[in-house]
Structure formats: C-alpha cells, structure tokens
View 1 (tube, rainbow, N blue to C red):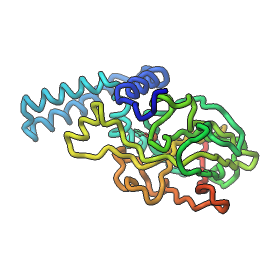
View 2 (view 1 turned 60 degrees about the vertical axis):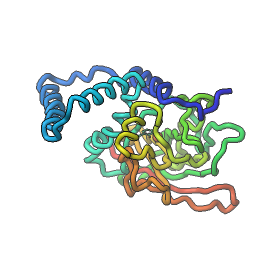
View 3 (view 1 turned 120 degrees about the horizontal axis):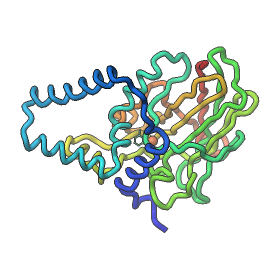
Length: 281
Ligand code: MBD
Ligand code: FE
C-alpha cells in the first residue's frame, strides 16, 4: 500500500482546492463599492512594493511564474491559510468573550463519524505516537455546562500527515465528532500529533526555500466546538516545549492555546484538560 510519506504537494493541494470549491467557494455577494475598495488597496500594495523596492523585470517574471505554479499545484488554499487567514480570524473574533479561536487551515473535513463521549478517535491498530487523553468541559460565558455540545477534532498523525490529504491512511484516521455528556464534559483518546511541515515540493515550499524561511508549524490539534444557540469556535491547541511554538509559519499560536499534558497515572501516555467557553449567538 502507498505510504503517507509519499504525499506530494500537488496531490494534497489539489484535494484541498477541490474541498474548498465544494464547501466554501460560493459567491459572497460583496457589493461593488467594497470590491472596489479592497481590490484597489491590494493592487496598490503590490505597486507600492514594486516602486519602493525598484523591482526588476527578472523579479516580476519570477513572481508571475510562481503565481502560475501556485495554481497548478492547487496550493492557493495552503498559501492563503498559512500567510493570510490569521488576520481574517483576528478580525472575525475580536469581539468574542469566550475561548480564543485561531485559523481553520486547509485540511478540515465536515461530518467526521460521530461518537458519544468518552470517545477514541478512529486510528490504525498500530497507530504510532504517544497516547493522549484530551478532556474538558464546554460551558457558556456564565460557566453553565452546555449539554451535548459538539467537539469536532482533526489532527495529523505521528509523521505529520492528515487523512484524506496524504495517501495510505484510513478515510477518517484521527478525525472525529464527539458529543459531550449532560454536564458538558468530553473525553477523547487519541495520539499526540507531530509538528507539521508544509509541503516542501510545491510552490509554497519553493517560496519558503527562496526566502530562507522555515516550513514548520508546531504540533497541533484542530477543533470546532459548537452548541445550539452559541457561536461555533474554530481553534487549535499546541504543546508546551514544541520547538516551533514560538515561530509558527502560519502565525496561528496564541498563549492561551498552549497545552502542557502530564504523564498519565497508569503510565499510558499523557493527559490534559482544556475547557471551552462559547459566546452566545
Ligand atoms: C496545516 O496543518 C495547518 O493547520 C495550516 C494552518 C496550514 C497548513 C497545514
Ligand atoms: Fe493543521
């Protein structure tokens, strides 16, 4: 069977592009004045850069070739989610009083199989990695439990690959929808993900190499937490001590989102508690 390590930028990029088209690429109906204002500012920012930096024809053509390649590799979702989404998220969530959110990234898949808490995420029989018990409570701003809250979770495996975007992984590996109990409590058994290196063999990797940047995100759990009458929160949780927690390529780490799991009493991996507070709709 094909291994997840044989993932290519172009294959995962095309998949992310298709998913985006299916789920989110509907016309926003943005009015003419707004389009005029935003498009004019973006075009002006590029022109200002050309004039101030005295950009040459060689540089302009390299830029053009690179933009063409981003599309060919299907890497627009990756590029935008790594370098732009964090600002959009900041604007979207600036008025929230509950838990912090952060970016969704390109690898969410809706409708992962649902389980009642306590749950074990779908994983291979010999799934590599340190076992992790992730548990907590979902409440409103008044600290009242939200019975039956929905905790959607997805994350990379111990080699940093996501199911449905790398070959050879079971469809729902390390993806699940967990329903909290009557007290808003949830418990999820999984494994600790590895730091994630964005694909180095596509257009985004080419930019990173040409600019002398690094390609890493710290290890992270992705989550969407929701309950009727409350605002859904999209977030990620990171791990204390991760070498990239201070320099995420996607600028999506916040101090409130860093977990520090403790060894489990039974010696089987680690455990951590994190509570979610949802804002009313
Ligand atoms: C990821 O796993 C991710 O979460 C983001 C934001 C970008 C690329 C890969
Ligand atoms: Fe991710």
